[in-house]
Image 1 (cartoon, rainbow, N blue to C red):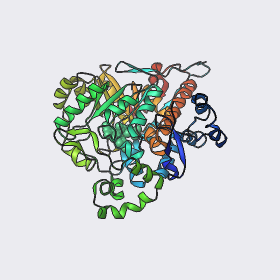
Image 2 (tube, rainbow, N blue to C red; image 1 turned 120 degrees about the vertical axis):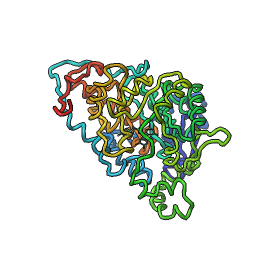
Image 3 (cartoon, rainbow, N blue to C red; image 1 turned 60 degrees about the vertical axis):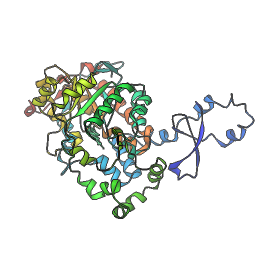
Image 4 (cartoon, helix red, strand yellow; image 1 turned 90 degrees about the horizontal axis):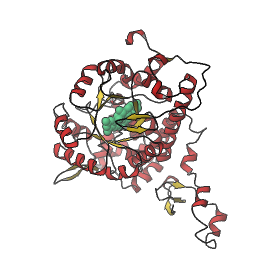
Length: 448
Ligand SMILES: Cc1cc2nc3c(=O)[nH]c(=O)nc-3n(C[C@H](O)[C@H](O)[C@H](O)COP(=O)(O)O)c2cc1C
């Protein structure tokens, strides 16, 4: 591991810090060691010393008791990033009915534990699309992750790989898909929007295949972008694409987060979308994504050409009914994801957990079922698995960590969910996630 000095943006550039080759910040070596460094042979002054002091400051800042739950990360994120960025991450569509219900609904399902059962080691492994995962959750596609923290999609993918799980890269990524794939030791899936038109999508699919992406995730619930009222109030569009004059009313919230602002500016400001490249025109600028989405609705008939071009497994994301689940199977989906886009698209649709039983019944074992929405604890994941999901996608749960503390935050968010899962299974008296089923939960009668 080599070390180079870099400016510590979180300390306003006043404090030179060390970074490892991955760009992770490490503590500066203590003064007494650095003063010896000129006389100690470099062979001695190397990895072992760095490892001794190698626990990153960021990791320590998100350790217990500062961060005990995902809710703690949400609060930290709110303090680190400007309101526009936080609300973009946190908010939902219109009255946020579905957003709230996505989280609340887990309270309706209670556990039926098997006590006095000795469970030595819980097995959290599962298999999704033929890939062995060490955890029954994947990291969901989160657009604009690089706005939350410069390490963005690269850091999240690396954290997923290190934890033995998969990462799904959004089309709306600030990092090149090749860099994201290279960062992870685990499977990486590419989430496809038809932004920029079919030619741009074809080019992205081709690049994703060459880079070694393992599956394509086609999101079908974005015929237009949902109206997220917080984004309008915070001037998200003006901040992203407006003139200086239009930005002015919204600048105080940005200036109130100097640490974030410094890291954003040092990262080069607003990135274009390097994976949405219109042939002959170049990368699409990150301006009005809502307008771009409205011009690029995906329909079932698009699945034909996408399947022919991709030839690998396809996940259809955004299923909420048995009918759409059947349709996705007919169109050749290798897996489906029961999802309402984290309550960010059509408001007042059912929570994902509530929609899951209908979909499970309709699918009748014919394809793998993933689900996402409202996962904030390991108990939420266990409930979704009991109701028939093979695995879940976590969205905000890791993105709060990313916004709060970059890659160290994602690592810690994953760790929180992993230990939650382990503890929940032990308390349930269940040795493996593969054994979870309806017999471990009470579900309201009306759900059947
Ligand atoms: C800030 C943000 C950006 C998102 N961007 C995308 C995206 O680009 N593509 C996509 O398919 N889903 C996107 N989603 C939806 C997530 O993939 C996932 O469905 C949702 O976050 C799950 O709900 P949860 O956040 O409550 O876990 C986004 C969600 C959030 C919160």
